[in-house]
Length: 129
Image (cartoon, rainbow, N blue to C red; front, side, top):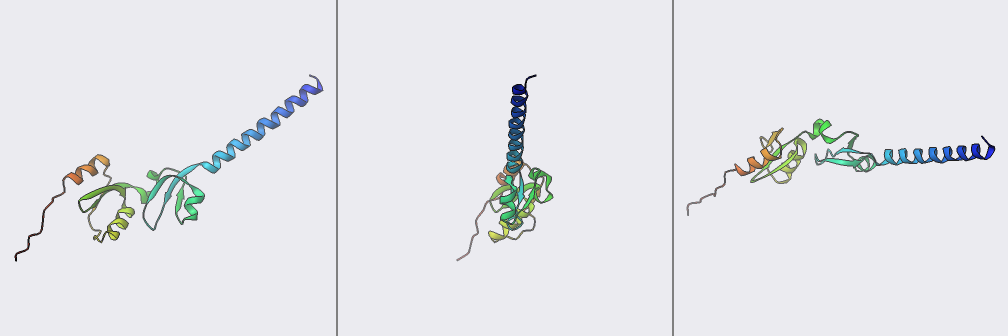
């Protein structure tokens, strides 16, 4: 093998190595996980670690299902329902002025949550004059 070919191969190896390092570093920076905000109880998938931590959140490289704080269920908020985590349901209930006693149904999926919404009793208060 001639000196020019060795130099060319060596140069290509350096370029290839630099490209691989760049690709791996970009993937490491842009890897997304779950961000849990303890203030609101919200769990956000596909969050960037730096953004999460900068806003006071707890970051996990896995998906939100891997965090116990993010286990989903159905939050019954008056005549509405929302698929959330326990902590977020507690936060929403307090902000709406509701007591947070038994309005979180742990483990409910979207279909079950919608069914709970449709099962709500509606009525009116009647005041004698």
